[in-house]
Image (cartoon, rainbow, N blue to C red; front, side, top):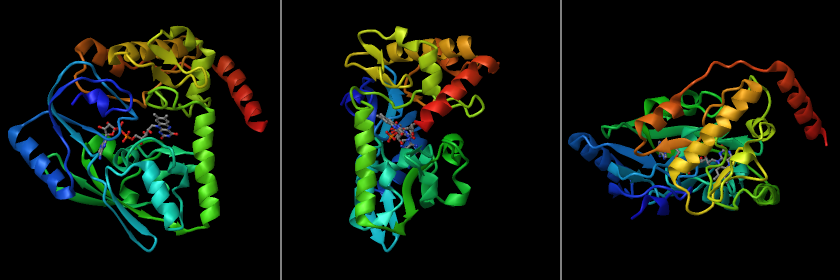
Length: 317
Ligand SMILES: Cc1cc2nc3c(=O)[nH]c(=O)nc-3n(C[C@H](O)[C@H](O)[C@H](O)COP(=O)(O)OP(=O)(O)OC[C@H]3O[C@@H](n4cnc5c(N)ncnc54)[C@H](O)[C@@H]3O)c2cc1C
């Protein structure tokens, strides 16, 4: 199977093996095998925050798409890593449980969504997780209470420790079905109104920089990045932090466009943006060093102040 068929961004070609465990026990078996055979691997959820590179991946890809079990006990829901965010929101609705409505229409699976502490529409996954069961790369099970997992904005211990999230336990609150449903509909409608699903993307390519205090989308827009759009790679006309694959773009073409975007913001505002998008697979040395390159922040305070005021005014209306 081509990786572009299991990746939201629709990039990537082939790999040596695609492994799709169906349970936590099978996942443990997969990692015992991988560690014994010393096989290179990467993990994929729905691929909605990731760009898979174009070349053949000489190793294994582990997909969670078949790990979809859920159980409900009162306010507590346990889900395996491959459950989709929207499915989870629906499950909570059916059980009259509040706290997950913001996850409706958020692309992705519970495992990766927990790993990066996803947030939107006033919600953040750290607010509803009770504990996380993970597997080490050698196939050993570990369990963490939420207090040890979340490290703030889009950050958790799993970004650095590279353990594999197998199951997440949530603690929700009894809620009102109509209110939960209304908020779920609102989230979905708002994303559609913002044309987020027009073409494959990875959502926001760059994180916000809270020191600059201006959303990265606005910095990108004011830096004029739309001029980097091509017939294959389009910077969304509605949100300059979204980069669309219009169907046949290679990962390299997408990545090159994002380098230009990052440079343009730095030139105009002195803000060096950090990637939110994850790059997976076989990345060549030159691209890897560009991706990981860091420039000193040297904020253009005057230009940023104008944008901060513009942003504050836009929030008032
Ligand atoms: C249209 C659109 C809108 C979006 N809006 C938002 C938004 O409002 N807020 C927001 O926060 N994000 C948003 N995103 C980004 C994305 O939806 C989230 O980051 C989502 O949580 C990614 O889930 P995934 O399964 O697709 O992750 P993937 O892209 O498959 O994986 C992301 C990373 O996690 C790793 N990974 C995957 N599964 C596991 C696992 N079980 N254990 C450990 N590591 C794992 C992967 O190797 C990769 O490094 C948006 C994306 C799109 C396309």
